[in-house]
Image (cartoon, rainbow, N blue to C red):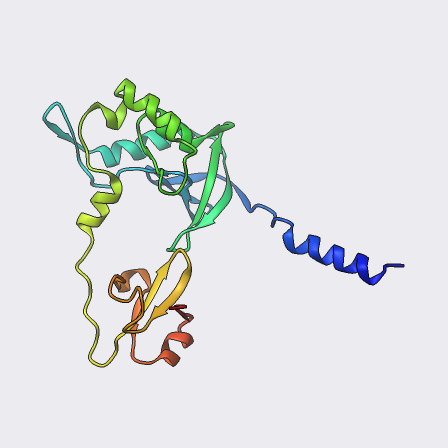
Length: 218
């Protein structure tokens, strides 16, 4: 018979036990150098950042489509093998961020080792050592000059969209989820709204909550 103490111990263990990792596998379609479509689910490769589709790099004074090349390198790394992805996180767009393998090889590591993607050190140091080697060897993206994929996205991003008259509450989607910011709060001025991503302006807090946003803490 369980005592009250043993019940409390079991409850505590259940609260601290890690959740089972979510794993998906199957045939994958390459979207770009760091993104896959795996059986209808968009998956972002963990720990790397690859050039965007349409992004150009410079090699010996000549422009080349490094975005398309990066996607081709990922397709080559997969071949016709099944891809297995284990969730690490979920990004601001609701995509599964995962460590993915094909033929037993880590696709993120392969992309960094061949110079087809950068280690995304802001989020993980896992592939930084691989990048050091690739950069020293001058392979792939390191054979010439480029701007980082992140800088390219910021340059190509649309201008901040103005608030409708009388609707100044910002509904932002970030790593912390769907949060709305009121004028005067700490992060209000720095928050940019892009309605293409599901972000929105609201006239009242009730509207924001009804749309699934929760208030910022400060």
